[in-house]
Length: 83
Image (tube, rainbow, N blue to C red):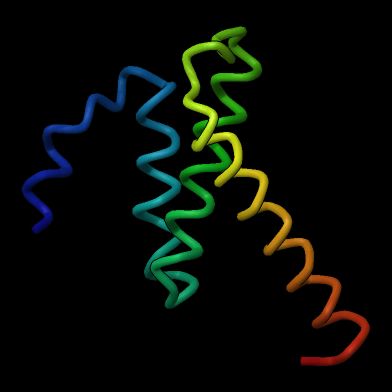
């Protein structure tokens, strides 16, 4: 399962950083969906900041926005509701 990581091109920051964040976030948060969410968001933001926004599929943009909204909603709920 870990052998596939050796095939990721970490020299290419557009794919390396999101892959790294996805791999690192999963075990530290004990949640696969958090890792996938951080990977989606970071990939979208990197493409946006590098001026390659047109290379993004609309579904990737929608997924990133929904993940970001879910993370913000969870943070607000834990702050104000206490969960």
